[in-house]
Image (cartoon, rainbow, N blue to C red):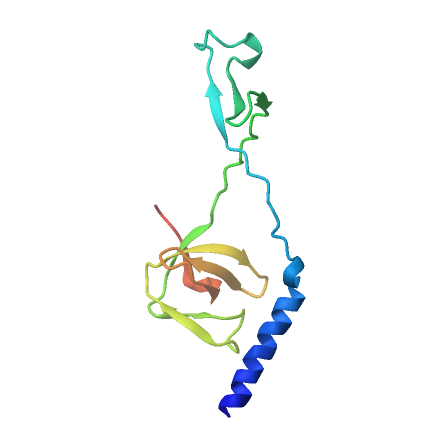
Length: 146
């Protein structure tokens, strides 16, 4: 058995050596990445031209180039539908119906984010505290007063 294992490892080693290029193998040389930083330039920077005043610029440390970067677009404010569980020990399920398994039991007052509400009265929700996602009958949810 020892001879078989030794022969197998020798064969696999030789196969890997040949498949990776053998004696003709040359390591790939990757170009060095350039380092850069984004700097916010204000109007008080007297040593910069007016075209760079009050804008964001990209400065490369490896080169002496300065490139202007476009201003980011504002992200719209997202409004979450936050509700609280109205019942005590309400089952949160893996799907929209009582035929699905129970994934958790939520106590009265637990805050949840409603992701969607189906026409059959089931709400897809995420528990704020734990991040767990599941389904619950929408009649067990009350609007959050906070």
